[in-house]
Image (cartoon, rainbow, N blue to C red; front, side, top):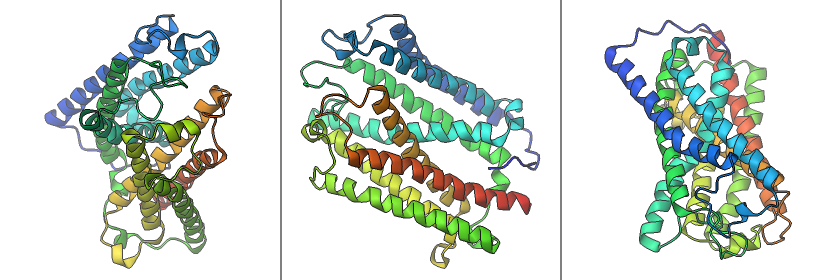
Length: 344
């Protein structure tokens, strides 16, 4: 998005002001458990880390400290973002300075909003550990990586953060960029030829990458194991299927949203612009954020010396492809809204 002079937002009503205040308080409170755990671990505490966990081993202590410091800063950044979304000075910030962190937050939290409740239900009905897919055990699967309550507390907090941030984001977008999101696809003016060609190429490339990402995931859901590490093959439980299904949903959302924005087919001309933008934003953000996060986690761990847990070439390509999908969806959306802003 470009920095534009938006129409003056109407003064907030008392109810709207109270809604923002409640959502802000909820978001900040939801950050406290996670930040508290991170500060405790950075201070040397073993709270929530059981005996026998690999987190208590001296190897990789520097990497673990760096990872904890990074994630603590990210969660503290959520608090700053909440104030930017609710205070008057937040509307005066450059668009990229608000939209960028919001895009990353959307990408990291959206899969949790889907996966955590579904995983909790799987835990109730199938006795599947909530950590799932190898995340809650060490390489042998014999010792707990973290105490089960840690995952419940942390992911519950993430879910509340997602709800609060989502509500504040919607109010902020309506105030600042709502005039760019009104109407249906059929009402959009035609783009200049060169811009239309560039947008079409980016949209088709993103859709093709989404299709490529769908193939292995659908095979995994059908029982295939191509490209999976030996550990993931052994740990294919309900949570694995939930997270893989969520990936499929985000791939479909990103592909459909970006194609709608770029080509505006007559058959779908009555789709609201805000709906197409939301699909593109959420799908692209979720794919890019988690693709980047998983690649970063692999780099921090030295790509796991154990061949049973080492990142496979296919997974590396999928994660890199997810980041490229996110970049392309942002390019298409930014082009569209820059055009709308320039034409008033």
